[in-house]
Image (cartoon, rainbow, N blue to C red):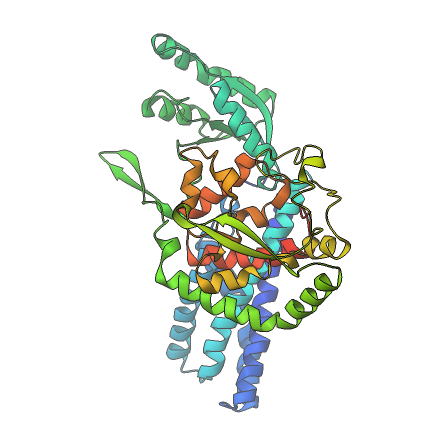
Length: 467
């Protein structure tokens, strides 16, 4: 999918942003060299006067050659950042070769600081640019008009995904229902390409998305590509893979056929010793850092009447119950008053939630809004009942209604935060919550955990979906 129209301005801005990051890196590297004092300032300044422009231009060219400005990689996935990191290695090799051939003296501190700081700043700049691009797409800019081809259920599913993920910039412009029987497929698909070409021109389609099973054979799809060669419309196929991370997928040719290999789910990784050590270390650190907040909150809740902590039975790994602690945010007799309340969550029927629950105390409303009530769960992480990152801890009443798929959530320790926390919290439907939890379990990685931790800070500060 390419960025079309005024998207050229975004690409130009991206090049300018990269150039500014590289120039800033040179200044910071020069400062680092000055602090350590490895090279005479006058010599380095003379070198930099002739180095900054060609070095910046060279680095930009390297990024471009490695695909760092490919429209299809912007806004999602890891390829964009992989290109940036690889450009740092390539730039280091080119710079070292140029300095050696020209016998130019240069501080090793400056050299390594430039590459490290430059690569880091470029990655940070791309993260900021991605945020801007996502927001622009949500507002209807840089979007691609999409025609979806497939059966009615597949079209409905893809339409829902596009509606839920507006940051992708995929705008549904039309559909082509393909419910042909096997006996009719040969004739039907010979004529389809003409219909698709006509529709693509009439509706100004940028992308034709073929749902799983909508193309009868690889030969048919190759014929489609021949007909659309040189056309402004791109073709893409949605494989029959649900919530599989890109780094678990490998495409390899086999007798001319692109075979997709998928790695096993990573639930074992989510139970690894490394994850446990990270959980233990970070939770102890957070307990120390947040100890003043823990003490003050406990005193405020206690002064409001009743105990400071609320103990509730939740279901942990392998279905084992454990006592989860929270700061009490409701009146003492909240459980007894449950029957007096109207029906709860209008979106998530499995989890009882009221946006304006009368049982919540004044201090409780505040600590819920910013998830302060969850902090005692850090002690559950230390004990080993919970993890920092994982599926939402479930109530026994919820687990009793679990389907076989939903019970997969119990393969790992529940988490204080997770994909559900950073993707909408209480505003999610039950199906969305389960899907996010299973996606996390199957695609676990330490980098995913760190990303969720950083996103949790933003979710807590924004307090969206917290009640």
